[in-house]
Length: 344
Image (cartoon, rainbow, N blue to C red; front, side):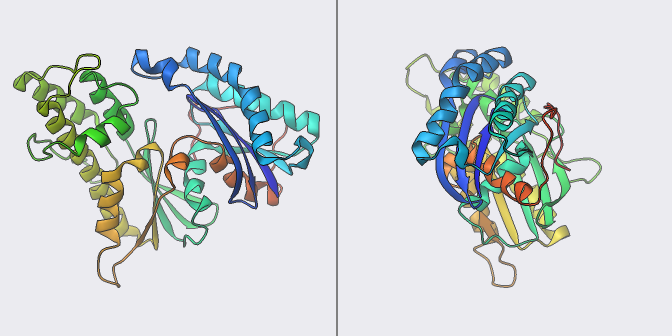
């Protein structure tokens, strides 16, 4: 089955054609980084306007790249939440219009489930049960899947997402937006042991995450050490390099600690790292070392998508929608979007 995927939950307008659930024929993404960079984050109203401007071109481009006609698709998969409601409605409205005009079935896809399926695009061999760490600018959660299409919520963040925490520090230090990739690059030249950050402890013993305390601690280090933000196009000081390295290390240590606790409780056969922050080089190497470089008895395979599939994209939405279309889990044209839609 050839499936058209459409994704517009935040600040990327994306369309893709995927055949058989993992054969990506095209994957087109119109980024809005330039539009939002001067604000240091995503402006919802601006994001909606950019989606309206880009959606038609992006979908046409996806068909052109795949050398397919509109009539060739077997169905349409579209993100209907969670995300920015205005952004979601642009992609959803376009998908419903196409489904009506082409008389093709339509299926809704939870954005978080889409991220999970991004790992399957290149690794269809992933074994159940698996534990997925979804980590991005808007999400940080652990989800356990004992069988295909079945999900159990293990933990979620109680305040900020990990990616948001990285973006905020980059903004404080004048490093630009998005902050995650910049911090990942700069941290390699810093001393991760110089600044101390305490790993949060959840009082009820749960596996939830918390990252707001890291921002407060970072501001304290900035004030106490007299660290000045980088001037536009200026040199990055060693103090900044050391701070971002220490900050990144603390966030990765927190993600690893909670995942290790979940592994002990649930005993998964596979671990998935998905979402924009899953592109972080320290996070990837740390998880590989912790779970794969062990004895044969305790080894757990760690999977993550290549960079273009970690950030928001439509190939993952088409992949997640393929089994839904195959089992006729289709939606009517009154399908709506939900900003706080939960997977489980």
